[in-house]
Length: 278
Ligand code: C5P
Image: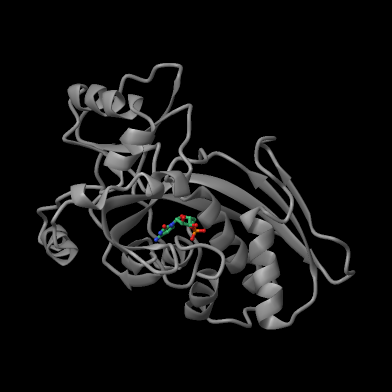
């Protein structure tokens, strides 16, 4: 059995480039793994029983729509190996938040199954396969900091950033990814060149922005007020991550953690080449 950390992510900047013929959007985004994490307990058996998934959060589906079991199916079909999976998910990452919890669970499962099977597959191959079941999954096979393009599945590894004061805040209500993309108004998108944003970041003058904030605020107007209240708490940067409804806050301040908010300090997290996130 393996017990692995399954960490969340934030998008330090996110540019929507265009809408594609397949219905997805081309993005250009700086992704960073963070310390907020689920934990996955996983074992395999060759006795051909059905897969078994349990979760500490009863609102999370534990059937084959769960990305842990989708990852198990993907690994088996790509490798031709036959085994059943028993997994338990300790859920701490809020869902519908833009923190990539489900994607991280899928990546962690693929990494774990590869270890449990004696490492038959190289990490770049796991990364490549994982795009079949979700656009944000390949990123987690980087070492924790990457510039991602295409649907999000084209991953350019970057050096880890310096640690800084980081808070995560999310209202109780979540946002569905397709719903936010549907609210996108291309006339209102920023005209930034994301390669310039990347260059500024690498030179130590980051320009944090998220083109999906406006459509998310249109879908859930109270998010704009939450952002204002976090800025007035004294943070330098308050930005929605992914399609929301979670925010990350950077700067020397503490958010007003009311009972209707998920609110936690966190940190940037990177992994070394041959191990998973610890
Ligand atoms: O790839 P994933 O399953 O995570 O995507 C979920 C949904 O998010 C897609 O069906 C699509 O509506 C939207 N999406 C998008 N453009 C992306 C990523 C996701 O429009 N780059």
